[in-house]
Amino acid sequence: MSEQLGDTLRRLRKLSGMTQEELSETSEVSVDVIRKLEQKRTLSARLPTLHALADGLGVELTSLLGDPPGARSEGDGDSPALVAVRRAITPTAFAPGPDPAEADGLSVAELRDRIADAWSEYHAAEFDSLMKTLPDIIADARRLVAAGEEGSHAALGKSFQLGGHLAVRLGKTDLAIISLERAIAEAEKSSDPLLTPMICNSVAWAYQRQNRLLDAISVARYAADRVKGAGLTTAESMKVWGALMMSAATSYARSNDYERADEMMRAAEREAERVSKLPASEDNRMVSVFSRSSVRIERVRLAVQHGHPAEALSLAKGMRLSKDTPPSWRTWLLLDVARAHTDLGDAEGAVKALESLRRVAPAWMRHHTLAVSIIRDLWELPNKPQGLRPLAQFVGVAD
Image (tube, rainbow, N blue to C red):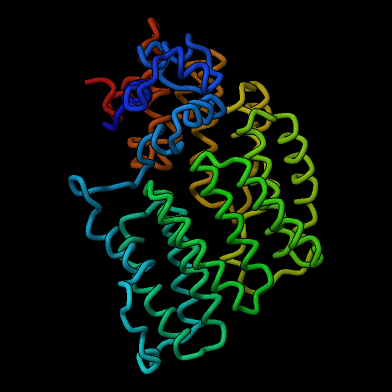
């Protein structure tokens, strides 16, 4: 099992040479909260608190949270599969570029299908499989660009965007930023006016993971204004704009401005009604996720993370998920519902949500720090709810 939050916090604090009191001063988090976390009297904290602690320590948020699900390493180095991804994104210096003749037998249409399938792997958290397929996708996209094929810059941009997302999930945020910057460079050479704003949304997300919240807001709002200025006349443009507004709202919330974030999310949910009434392209598999259900899922997440568990459960009650909602979003919704029930002292409700989560994403649940922390908190209760023991055994909290 990965290092617990309290252990990580203590280790990073000592590495920085700070006392608990000094960290409290730099982070504006009370000494009592820091002490409880380090002594494991509490095993989790709200996201704004984690951001503040990371900022006070001068580290990325991912350093405090630990590797996300799917991260793998070989001793002190990266796995061979991750090395291959890194090499695909940042090829050897001074190496010759691909020969245009190598593009024979390749087509942009076929590559787009492969990229769409790879995004499906990403949303299903099949990171091991994705690390094996992505290097070849990037290599073939480079070959098509060298051959001057129409649409190849957009394909390479989407490939780099996917590389950035994968790198974030593997805890490699610097590699993610490099990949996303290269994605934007290719997008600017393409004929797709929405591609750069879509990638800007990915950049904003990577900045969030690096605790660069003001930068994340700036990028998201810039790109949203760019899309709106061009006109919200299609479902695709509305989806991209909506996803950017959701991203900005999330960063406001993580900056402890929950009221502003909630206002933006309510406005986004109202605008999502228009998506189904606007003309859509034939293939929207690689367009941003934006619908009433996706906005509602994000509102649930923000409510539970910022101390409004009752509101979170009210938002989640009776929710109907649209068919384009990625499996990863459904997974997060169940985890947030479990967290909300736990915060309200409803152990039975939390167990029911966790049982559903285990059915939907067992491997993800077993390795996710927050899921394990919730189960551990429940396991410490004097009166354990029915159904908890199998869950505790599944994640290694109980024998």
